Image 1: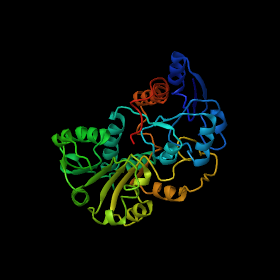
Image 2: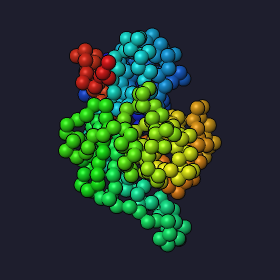
Image 3: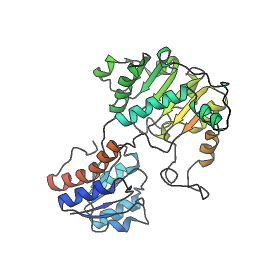
Image 4: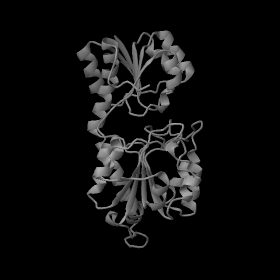
Length: 333
């Protein structure tokens, strides 16, 4: 059995190498993304594992099929990058990663607190020796209403954590979870928009959710609403977000993800000119100039615990499919 591992971070190396040694798996690995220029490394492999920045184009998938690859395993939870429909047409078994929701949920609560306490302005001003209180008055969560869009494992955990702050919690999901009702009240989207002081997004990226936070949605929200997107950048219409920031319809925004971020995040650009096809880099740069806009490089998931679990999934899911014919990490049809 042979596995080709792409986008391997230094922290993943001992986990992936250790599991492959344990199972007697031949391993080839690289820190580079899977794409048309690197796909050759997978020749002769039975399974391929990547993170979320690799390119699963039709061309790449055709090549992998020709190499005899049987299993494609994303080590991250999201799999919108995997060209699922075409991959399934070719007969690949598809798996995704899994990890405890606590890291992202805790990061979300931090994002909310940073936003309502105007931490970015406080930090920047203090670094510039401006020790005044001007423009730094915040809010207390206990007096606010928080809308949680998406109550899967992460959204549910966010609700539980927020409950200790005493805020009112509204929730929305196509599939309601009775356990969530202990902490939050399920309402429709329009009620989330109309009544929430803070809205945090935890929905999967699907055709139906792409760009769901758009101009129309923003028009239904409170003036000065605080938005948190630690899920996928493509869930928001970035032009509508820019207009909302400019008009102060949005009081603050925290984004750990950004549309078209592939090629930008997780690599240094401090000594080069950022040029990535399809990436609205100038829009991100413009938004980052707002004192009430915070952007981080898709790191909400990045804890020691979650990183180890993700790396394990990348190897275990391939091994399970090839030895048992199935894996608990298979992406549902």
